[in-house]
Each structure stands twice: as C-alpha cells, then as structure tokens.
Image 1 (cartoon, rainbow, N blue to C red):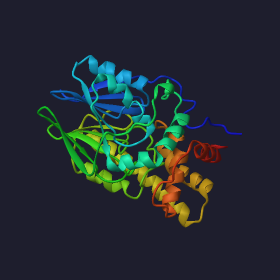
Image 2: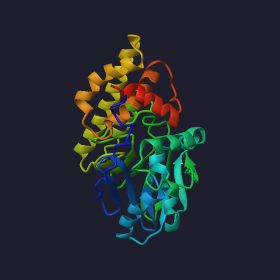
Image 3: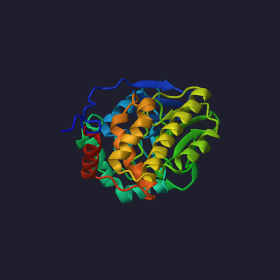
Image 4: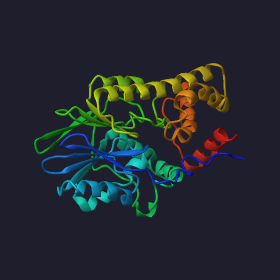
Length: 321
C-alpha cells in the first residue's frame, strides 16, 4: 500500500505566475516551482527559452509577450530535451517561429529517448500536461550547434553555450553578454529539487563552477524565482552544487557499503531531508535522483532510459512506507 501519490499526480493546484522584467530586453516567466520560461526581445524579433509542456500552456507566455511587443517570436531555444520544457514549442508556430535551436547532444537524446521521455513525463505531471491532446508529437530542433553559437537579434547579441554535462548531457545556457543576464535551464535550481534522473552527477559541480566563473548579475534558473542580484545568483549556484554533491556523495557511500537501492534511499534521505525536504518537487524527484545516483556510483556512466513503466515500478518500490 503506497502512502504517496506517484510523482506529481497529487499536485493539481494552479500555480501563481510571476512575470519579471530583468532588463529592457529580458523577462522571466516563473510559477512557484513549475518549469520556467525565458523571454528575450531583440530589435527584430523575440526568443523564447524553454517552451512549456504543451502548446496550450505556451499561450500564457505568448499573452505576456504580446502585452509588450508585436514582434514575431522567431526563435525557441531548448536548454535540454525534457518533455515538460519542449512539447509546447508548436504553440509558437502561429507567432512567426522560424527556428527551434538546441545542442547537437540534445538532438541525439531526442533521437535516443525522446518518445520514452514524453510518455514518462506525461504520466508524472498531469497538471502541466493538461490539454496534452494539443501536443502534435515530439519537438524536433530545426537548428543544432556544438559548443557555442551566437544569434544577433538586430544589434542585440545572444549567446547559446554548453558549459559541460549536468542535468543532462545536452545542457545549454542562453545569455546576454552586454547585460550579464543568463537563462540556465535546469543546470541551476532555486527553492526546488534538482531532478537528476538523466544527470551526470560527477560532472555537474564542475559545470556549475564554469557557470559561476562567468559572474552573471542575474540568472533565471530552471525552477524557482528569478535570481535578481549577483549575490542571489551565487547563492543559487551554491544551493544547486550542495544538492547534487550531497546526493552523489550519499550514493557513493551507500555503494561502497554494498547497500541496495532501498537502503541507499534511506541513507540519502538522512543526509538530504533536513536540508532539502521542504523545497518544490522534492518527493517527486528523490526516487529518480537516488536511482540515477546509485547507478552512476556503481559505474553506469550514461543514464538509463526512463519509461512510463520503469517510472512506476521504481517510484512505488522506493516511496512505499
């Protein structure tokens, strides 16, 4: 008998939307721990960073953009491949969408596991996937890059860059060099659990150090409030580093002692619950996080593919009690 509802199935209350102005060009669309969306308004068009879970959900972002500008929404950038961030991209087609941009690593992950991820995440997040029938299928990038690329939106320079593996192997940040503003995707979180089911936990802290060295003045994390000062940016980076390091260290200790997955979960909880138990989507993420951490600590370098069936089996095995 499970005492907890699977993943985020019990999380059905609508979240309060925040629309924050970061500069004359940049805005953050955040919602109490739901996946964030970034908006950059250039001279000749608009760029969206992370597209929401469905085309219907994307209409909320579009409405905010249209309060400010009539310029076409020309670009959608995907910080990584997860369904909850990418399946809304088709909602921008009627707004002038020309390119969906992602790293080549993200493209490869969509080829390898995009369909399984889509089926899996729709089961995990019923509220975010309301009107799921509006999703036409997988979101395929129309332009990919390796390492770094620059988009000029008139005179405004936008850089899209990979800093290393973390939340996924395809993680990409988007930033405005002239304004020291960054959109990090799930490489950084604030007041929310880090989902690490597809992560490279040994690499993530170094990738965060690479990001910290860029000294951004403002940063929009994957979940949680926009970080509006350099101090808050550094605090968000430190929080994320602490979360993933504590998780991975706990799994390494457990594997060294020969613990199975269930025992590893208990050992990890002892280290994580006091520090992180109160943050957004913690109970949803933890079973996925511990499973991946145990795998990586056991020498499984690349994340195993999550299927809807594997999700349910693993989650109920670890969250019963």
